[in-house]
Image (cartoon, rainbow, N blue to C red):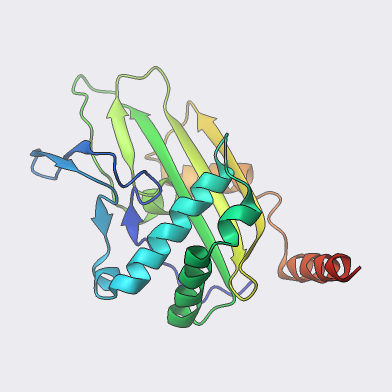
Length: 204
């Protein structure tokens, strides 16, 4: 694959937009907000594109969740098709690679607070949403999807949880996380072969 662009457009876009959460800002002020908790400035400028991205991320989470809805049902909806078409038009790419996630960090200090972290590394693997709590173990839940924008199909996905880890360490994002979640990521050639086989089966 050749990476055409990389973006961290939202924090918490995979969460139910109706769920209000108490969030602390950088000054420590508590605010009740509904997802997404953060939208990148360049995304804000294009409302249709922002809504399309948020819908696709949320729908991917619905497909990959434990009690997820059937992929064909979600990806064949008119709203989903229109959203994928908008993303294809704005990005000029054929394949979209999405990562979303949610995690908790066990603080080493005595102060336990809930906060939003929007750094590039955490945004890439956790969706930027990291809560510091009194949980016994740190964990991160991740969901990944590779979507063919031309056909509107999910061609590869993976999801899972990593526990008792150091989410603030750079090595986690450079080594541990990719090793656990991207080990079966198909090559570009394999993805094309999959689409070719599927097309033959559909014809038959």
